[in-house]
Length: 434
Image 1: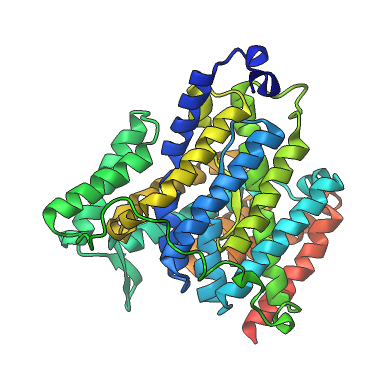
Image 2: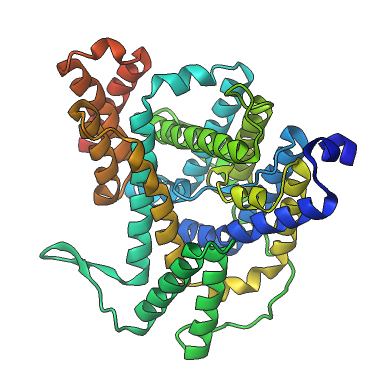
C-alpha cells in the first residue's frame, strides 16, 4: 500500500494520511444534509438523495484516490445542485428525471473530452474573466438561497424582496447559525461549516424550534430506489431541444472549470505542480467525470472535486490514501440518515451563505477597468441571483462578451467557440420568450 501511493516519496505515513482524510470529510460533510434539501425542492425523495449523495461522494473519491492518487475528495457540487433544482427543474419546468439525464450526458461528454485531450482547447476558448464571473455569480445565487431559507430575505410585492422578520424563532436560529459558522471560519477551524450546522441543530432542538421525529441516530441506510436509474426514465423527444442543450452545456461548463480550478488549487497547495503542469491531470479529470455520470445514475446532481480537500492537505495529506479514508467515512455516514430530520433549512442556511462568500472571492480576478470585460462579467454575476437562474447569468455574459469585444476593436481575440456559443445562447433566449 505504501509503495503504491509512494508514502516515502511524499514523506507521509498511514497516520498522517488518515487524519488528513478525516479532516477533509469533516470539512465537506455538510453536503450530506444540504444536497438532499436542495434537490428535495425539485421534488426528489430526500432520503434517496441522501444515499445517492453519500454513495456518489464515496465512489468518486475512491476513484480519485486509487486512479489519480491525489488527496482530493469529490461530492455533489454546491451551485450545480442549485442550478439543477431552481433553474432547471423549477425555473425551466423540466422533470427532475430529465435533469438527471442531462447530468449523465454532461459527464459522458466530460469523459470524452478528457480521453481525447481537447480540454485545453475548451479552457482557452472561454476567457478567464467569464469563468471567474460565473463562479462569483453562482456564489451570490447560493447565498441568496441561504438568506431566503433563513427568512432573512423575503418576497415583497412593492420591492420584490425585503428584510424578513428577524425576531421569528426560525430566523433567529438561522442568524445564530450564521454567526457561529462565521466565527469558526474566521478562526480558521477546519470543518467550521459542519460544526456550525451541528451546533445550530442542537440549539434548535433545545429551544424547541426544531422537532426531532425520532428513529434514533443510527439506522439501516434508506432505500435508493426512488432515484436510482430514474435518469433513463424519460421521453427521448425531450432530449432533442435547445432547452436541453443549454442544460447540458451549463452542467458541463460549470463542472469543467470548477473541477479544473479546484484540482490545480489543491495540487499547488500540496506541491504537486511541476513546470506549471499537474501530473496525472487526465486521470484526475477522468475520476471527476466518471463520478458525475455514476452520481446521475444513483440520483444526484453533478459530482465534482471539492476545494475543502485543501483542509486535508493542510493536515498533511499527500497521497490517494487520504481519499480512501474520506471515501470510507462517506460510506459510514449512510447509517446516520435519521439526522436529516433535524437538519432544517434554518440549519443549512449558514452553509449556503458562507459557501457563497467563498465563491464570490473570484471577483478579484476580473479587470473592472476595462468595460469590454467588466460589462459581460457584471451581467453574468448579477443576472444569476436576480433571475434565479445560473444558466441565464451565463447566457448574458456569453452574449455580451463578443459584442463588447467587437465594438472595442478586439474581435480577433475572441475564440471561434465563443462566437458559436453566442448563437446557442441567443437561441436560448428566443426559446424562453416563446
